[in-house]
Amino acid sequence: MSSPFTTIKAFADRLESQPVDSAEARMAAAERNGLLTKPPGSLGRLEDLAIWYAGWRDDPRPSLERIQICVFAGNHGIAARGVSAFPPEVTVQMVANFEAGGAAINQLARTFGAEMSVVPLSLDTPTRDFTQDAAMTEEELVEALSAGWSAVDPEADLFVAGEMGIANTTAAAAIAAALFGGAAREWVGRGTGVDETGLALKAAVIEEALALHNAARGNPLEVLRCVGGREIAAMTGAMAAAREHRVPVILDGFIASSAAAVLHCIRPTTLDHVVAGHQSGEAAHGKLLGMIEKSALLHLGLRLGEGSGAAVAIGVLKAAIACHSGMATFAEAGVSDA
Ligand SMILES: Cc1cc2ncn([C@H]3O[C@H](COP(=O)(O)O)[C@@H](O)[C@H]3O)c2cc1C
Ligand SMILES: O=C(O)c1cccnc1
Image: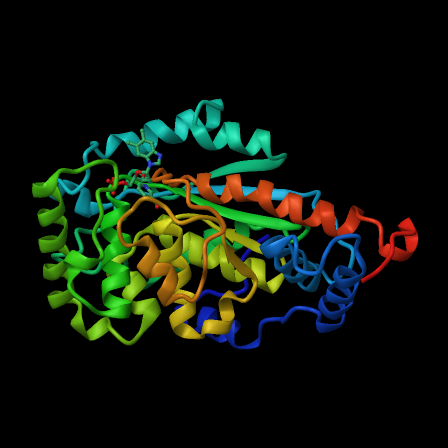
């Protein structure tokens, strides 16, 4: 499927009129939840998850059959500043690993019954070093948003966006700092494992970028263009497309959350179809989730990306839906109600 926009403005306009969930299905699911053979509220967040999912699928007794994980890959000019513990050629090497089935996300996709695809985005042309120039031109941003948009299967019943891009925790932290303010130091983390000097370098690089791109602040898509990356923009486009098709999304870690934050800052309701799968070990992820008003399902200390934390959370959503749609009601089971 191709994307329905060819300009940044047309993408932004598209966000103005996106569908909402089915209140009828959501309310019917809440009613069903109250009839199931368990003390009220005893399945905790699983109950909320099933009801949320039912609303987006327009089905009070939904199932989860067609799960899509899409891993977007991009290269970053900022990698040349030494902000990652790994060299930039790892991005393309990991793409080959995804294609061969050898990465963590391959195993998780198989474990949770998801279809996984990889979308490399102009890997031979890294974004520009955003301390010197905007990371992307307008055309490049539109191309990346479109690639993400087009990657979403409208027939999927759940979508996860993952990413691979050496140095992208620096881009994600720059986006977060530009959108939400605060010192760069508060938004940086160790990514692939940089030391204290590396952390200080990341913060310094981001401060330089914020000074250069100060005019972009207040315009979330311009922030994405100036300090983001192709795979991050693709995740933004994909999450918006999922909303267009009423496909619920499980959000991955810090980098995916920076892509989601762009949508949140355009309008917070653009993330109503999104649930946070996990809180990653990247230092500022908890703070970023707070900014986008999401509370993570899992806290496992993962700090990988690739969609891995979201993939593990698919298991939680499956558990929620299995209970909600499969359990007997008090009347059906002949169990005495309170
Ligand atoms: C082998 C390998 C596999 C990965 N899979 C995801 N990432 C993760 O690490 C990168 C972000 O960290 P930084 O900003 O420090 O470069 C991203 O590619 C992210 O997806 C990986 C990193 C490596 C080295
Ligand atoms: O939270 C993430 O997305 C993350 C953290 C560290 C490295 N790569 C990704």
